[in-house]
Each structure stands twice: as structure tokens, then as C-alpha cells.
Amino acid sequence: MGLHRNICLEVTMNKLCKEFVEYVMLSAPKHNKDVVKDDICSKFSLIQDGKVFHNESFAVRFSYSKFDSPSFSNTILSLSSLEKYDKIPFFVVLVRRSADNLILLANTTLLRKISHTSQALSMTNIKGSFNGSDIIRELNGKTNSPENFDYLFAVHQGLDWEDNLSRLVDATAQIKSVSQKFSPNGQEQANILSSIERSIRFIGSNSFAELKADLDGRCEKCKREIAIASHIENINIRGRLIESLITADDLERERIVRDLMHIESALPSYDTKNGLGDYCRQFDDTDTLTDIKTILQFHWAGRSSRGAAQFNGAVLDGMLRDTQFQNAIDLKKSSDFIIELLQR
Image (cartoon, rainbow, N blue to C red; front, side, top):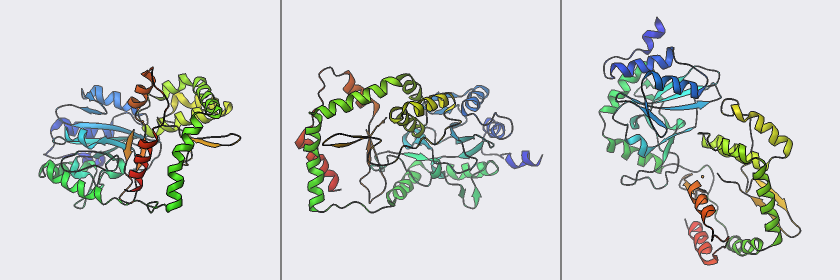
């Protein structure tokens, strides 16, 4: 009875919204995100729009964590997608492997900043996504929990989209890198620029052909598993898994494949080191490090960082479909690009 009283909402949110929150807390399945999502979507007649499920009363994004902690850093949604649902309660339901479901209100008023791909965020350029760690857990002395959702959403209704956007733009602009920006000296800059010519020479060598054949063979061995892994929604899990499948030896690859059916609920630590590359091959006159990427996006790490580039699947698809494609490096374009990065 006490628990029921604690999670009841009062007047601002409509009846169906209250029923949803209460159901998530008291009656919905637990521990398996797909089961929870399918059950809730069926019960409340939710329509899918990308990663968001909604009806006229509320919208929800389901997320998963194998940890019991209420803290999680999963990427939730792009700010531009949230804008479509910001006038109704927008919830995040965190399904935890061995703990109860957690539900948070995540309208723009309840966001601290925008973390992901947000370098170009401005009042006229809605960019970037927010993570679970960006959701405010206490506002005006009220915790972001069911007993306070009515109050929190009432506060949100009192603010315009532009009010929250202005605050988020300012807060995001203050993101600082945890490390100092690399400022190469003259010799280091020369070494960086000369890497373009070294790359051009390597691409035309027998060693490159050998490396390509090696990687092609590795992908061929696990192409079915890569195809399965490509459907995993969590981009961090998906990327780590595909990298591991390609770079692992045969015994390790077999172990990973055995875990694949339950990968999101029982993911071991597939540790792909955050170094210069994921796969190392040494040749007589060259040491190579190959970085395996699965999405071209720029990620902002703060004002003192130049960010990081990743590949977009559409870009790779275009290369694969181009029967005239040649792996040719344009020396001038490459030099201009590196110089632009060094001047940031």
C-alpha cells in the first residue's frame, strides 16, 4: 500500500500516463529489455518511431543495463528527435539485468547538457544526442522519480522549447576535455603530414595486399555473426562485438559466437583496447595498426579536443557499390584536411 501511494501521480499528467508509470514500477516484466518493451507496447498501444514508442499521452525510450546501479551512460536519443515529443511526458525506462525497472522523466527541462555529436549545437542548428548520465536526477529539491513526476512535468510545461534549448546550448558549450589538446611541434607536424605519403606507398605494396587478404578472410569466417551483431541496438555493444569477432583468434571467436544469442543480457567484457588501432600486423619494413569501424560522425569531447571521426554505414555502402572505386589517396586533400584539424 505504501509503495502504491509513493508512485501515484496527482493531477497534471493524464490517467493513461499515470497507469503507465504505475505499471512499469509494479507489474511490468523485468530484466529483459525486449520482453519489457513488447509487453508495454502491447498493453498501451504504443507506436514505434525509430527508437521512441509513443501514443497521444506519453512517449518512452527503453534502455538496458547489465548493472544494478541507477546510473547509466547509454546514448538515449537525439535532441532533434526529442523535440517532437517534448510537449508530452517523455520517459526513459531502464531495464536492469538483476534489478527492478527504473523510470525517469527526460523532457528537455530534465536534461543537464547534450553530450553526443554536439559540437555544432546552436539555437539554429539542433545537433547531438543525450546520454543517460545527462538526465537530471534532482530538480528544485525534487528527485526524478515517480512520486515527483507530476511536479517535474508541471515545471517543464512552464518553459518554452527555446528556453531549454538556450540553456542546453550554453551548458554543452562548457564541456571540457579531460586532457590537454595535443599541440605538436614543427617536427611532429612534419611527421604527421608525411604519414600521407607513407600511406600512399603502403597501399601500393604487397604488404597491403597481404593485410587486406588477412582481414577479408577474418570477416568471411564470421560474416554470419557480423550480420546478426549488426542488428544490436546498443552501438557500443555492437561495435565492440564486431571488432572482437574480426580480431580474435579462432578459439576466442568461437567463445564469442556462443555468447551471441544472449549478447545484450549477458555481455562479457570484450575489451577492444582504445589504442591507435584494433588489429596489429608487422611486415618486414612496416608495422601496421588497423582501426575497425562500424558508423562518418564527428564526436565532440570538449573545447580542448579536436573530436574523433567514425565511419557512417552509408558511406561504406557507397564505396562497396561503386564498381569503379579505387583506393586512391589524394595527397592535397588529405594534407588540407590534416592542416585544418591541427589548426582547430
